[in-house]
Amino acid sequence: MKKTFLVLFTAITALSACNKNDDNKGGVFTGPETAVYHGKAWTWIELNNQGSIDKAAISINDEALNSVTVGTGGGGTHHHDDNIVLKFHPKADVTLFDHIGLDWNPDGHPPAGVYDKPHFDLHYYMVTPEVRETFLDPAKLNAGIPAEYLPANYFGGDPVPAMGKHYVDLTSPELNGGTFTQTFIHGSYDGKLVFLEPMITLDFLKATTNFERALPQPAKFKKSGYYPTKLRVTKANGVTNVILEGFVYRSAS
Image (cartoon, rainbow, N blue to C red):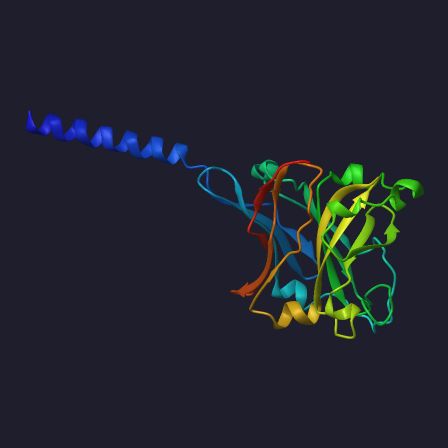
């Protein structure tokens, strides 16, 4: 009898543990690796136990950062020669993001004297690559987001076909006599938010082991969902992570 009870107790305990794990929706979920020059990059998300987003990130290893082709500066242009599509794990369907466009600018891009350092544009897109490639209508590219749906002090610049209209933070150091190291951009098409973009220099990514900043927030949001409030850059074991975190649920208004 005692042996039978022990076996039954063990079975019940194991079943309970299994059910508990089934109820736990959290974890880290990694997207497919993609070659970047002589290295690689990949996306990952971290979900909490309720299945909501805690972090959405891109990882780039040292082999990639050390092998990208670096120009001489001068501003270059936005182009698609070094644009890489990085997919998220299917679990990312709980987020607003569909994929990351990892765009390498060996000479930087305009305006000259501001963003003309070798840098990555890390577009966290809210649409599929196929939809993004249709962003070609000049009127829709130029259509602006109403001010209340942008953070204070954000200003719309020139649009880029197959990307969207870019909005920069006028209080950023590089726009006030400082040096460009990292900044955070919003992007739109047809007056709707379609991407969030950390833009970070190669030198900053190589030199940084732990960096955190708050992200300016709009007064209103057109689409309900979880939006990041922080940007973090970390480095460990030969990998640099660019992480959006501090997600807060916003209701459309």
